[in-house]
Length: 543
Image (cartoon, rainbow, N blue to C red; front, side, top):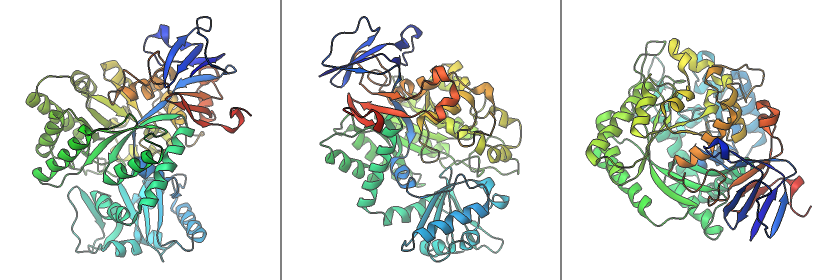
């Protein structure tokens, strides 16, 4: 079955500017058979008139958390609440709307919305005290809980801090309601995982995939896959006869236990899964390690202290990091390392260099995630090692930047999220959203990349506009380069003959209308592997 698309503007994302635009596309089965001028297009079984609309390659969200995103879409949304009073009002309303719930979960609150940036259980208790309340921060590196949740988790003054985490305490040593880094993972998320059912996870999977195809995303890279996520997506694949509506590549999460043998046992499980039979729809491609925290909570590992004089140690010290990276590298797994602070990115590259020295010089494509603040020279070092810069324009939204800047409080603020540095150095730059730490909408992500202005609040002006990128390059980083970031660059990510037929049709052409139109543009159709996976009501075929 062949389909000819005519009368459109097709941005192919081909790195050759002479091939970046086309007029017609032919899909044969699940691949592109022709991309070029209208006059040269072959006949096809079916012809679709695009009516002058813009066609793009399907986006690949190169760093996301699928189950968490699916769960977050059904939780209390707190990002727009810019004061404690507003947060409390949203919690009261959610409790009133869900009188039978045994637990209340929310996500997305910002530190600068809380007096002194210091949330307490008492603040939540004032709004909801009768059921446990768990509120994940916007960056998902800390969890704010009420007194009922502290009791449910069994956290008391005698509970020790876990490795790489902190239970916030008052002057008398009593827990205050904040769980940072691995304390959030071990206690709040551990309880969440233990009380979430397979039915719940199946709903989360479906919710996330539906949201993605509706916003033009045809592939994702999950950056915290575990046994729960693997089983849930295997069930989803089975329900569809071996397929999924989006392509899922996954990185197995490796947590630092403090014991090298236990850490390597986790890597062995990832190697087993990566080498097991898989499908183009669902596969484990590597491991993920969280080396540090976030700048907003002063838990990212920096070379120099924060404005308040504090600093954070890495969750993975270099000597514990080296054997894990080397083992994964030796097994040809891709390594992704969360490194937000400049010290974290330094040791991430040190560990990769150690693996190269130990395992020999051969093709490899490792990654560093986020790179919100990296020292000068980091981009060049990454390019030399062939390491991908995996970055999220949505994290640079100026509407949520004030606390980030205040925590650093010095000249480092002026080098926040410097995407052109990585381009200039020749490193592969892959864009993503890190949903649910930020909205998953690909077009809004491109707006921030192209303007450095806010997609959350249009009244907020652009910040650091010198780091903005032209729309053509931004989309290339979110399609072609995002696919290449997991080794798929030779068969998907752009519109070219022989490539996977993944494309989207927009109702607006931001190349012609300007970057602001990205905030209102809608996806009319999403095609994955030659099949329509989402179609807006007004253009449903046959209507």
